[in-house]
Length: 314
Ligand code: NDP
Ligand code: GDR
Image 1 (cartoon, rainbow, N blue to C red):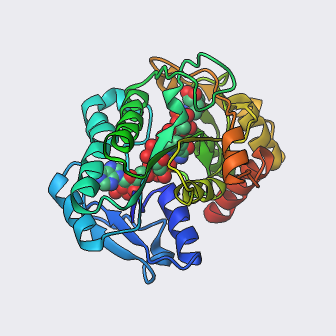
Image 2 (image 1 turned 180 degrees about the vertical axis):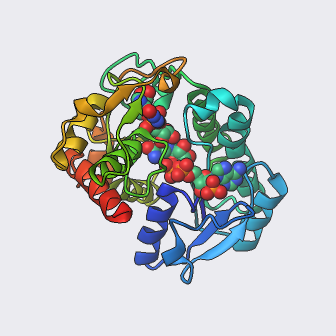
Image 3 (image 1 turned 45 degrees about the horizontal axis):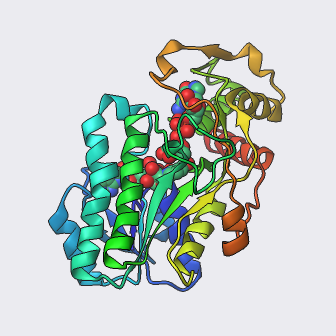
């Protein structure tokens, strides 16, 4: 069972599990329009059920009815800037939603293995570099704070009830299916528009921030591996390389033969009230114990995303 199956990671994870022969149940929330953009090609192979992270009863019902062997909680309000505008809702989805789902499992099917989508945003104003499982958290946004709660409640259900509940602390991962508001996709989309003569500039916030960016398709493999371990344990997942937003712009524009400095404008509207300056993963535990390593480099990722947007917009 995957919550957030309509999101970027949900779509890649559903593909991975279907390829492994799993029966996959995708949890969706009710909307008045089609939100199946990323999973349309999988709909004939997926079971889709309706539940909402805000609604305890719906979560307990889907767990009770399906009795899934594995539950991946990928659903969340996942966009950091929105968490300042809607801090309470972000807490309801991203923090308390985890408790609701854990309670549903505890009451209806405690044998299920549970994966929580934790985030490098919990490290925030990082107290050490690179960041590993033991690095203390210092979140810098209501989103990061909510994820820290989701992380600790997962640890707590593991320790209180002996549940197989793990948390993957994943660093930024991107793809052509990334939401358009996140910086990598915003850049790849703008580069394609500018190249095709559909736009003239790209407005961004802080170009100095550094992130450890990987490919989402690689990261869902790590999620699955965490639930196949003999013991439940938390893992940091990232590439171990960092690039700035400026590096991202340079790579994306140069891939289509353009000079980024002619098109990128700084716009204070995109600067955050509190920034996470740099994040860099030490994923040595995942490499050692899960046998996991990223396959797609930063350069390959940027090219993949720009090419996909050029093709889509052309
Ligand atoms: P997306 O924003 O692409 O997907 C979020 C998903 O959550 C969507 O399917 C959305 O449904 C669903 N959702 C939101 N609110 C609710 C709700 N109240 N009830 C049920 N479903 C809901 O995120 P990603 O795929 O990028 O990320 C997956 C998870 O991993 C998230 O929890 C994110 O915070 C976390 N994460 C992501 C990282 C990344 O770099 N991508 C890094 C670390 C952690 P709908 O389609 O209806 O909006
Ligand atoms: P992040 O991703 O906040 O790291 O969270 P995002 O792509 O939004 O920002 C990365 C960095 O780029 C800077 N930036 C801009 N960001 C956006 N979105 N738009 C801009 O115009 C812009 N200009 C500069 C930001 O300030 C920031 O430093 C993502 C999400 O997927 C979370 O859900 C996840 O938990 C973390 O990654 C790990």
